Length: 78
Image (cartoon, rainbow, N blue to C red):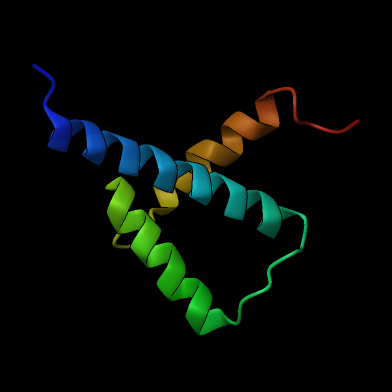
């Protein structure tokens, strides 16, 4: 027997992740159509649906680690 509520929950999370990806793509290309308050509320709702939690504070050590990795790798322009 299929657990329908669990299946629907998984589908909802999947759809929310797809919407977050689409919004991220639109932002990257400069096509944001909402004002800041609406956008923040929209992203908060999608994040809650997907279970993504915003970091509590900026982690300088992780940032420096990412910077070092980026300077070693293939995204370095010549």
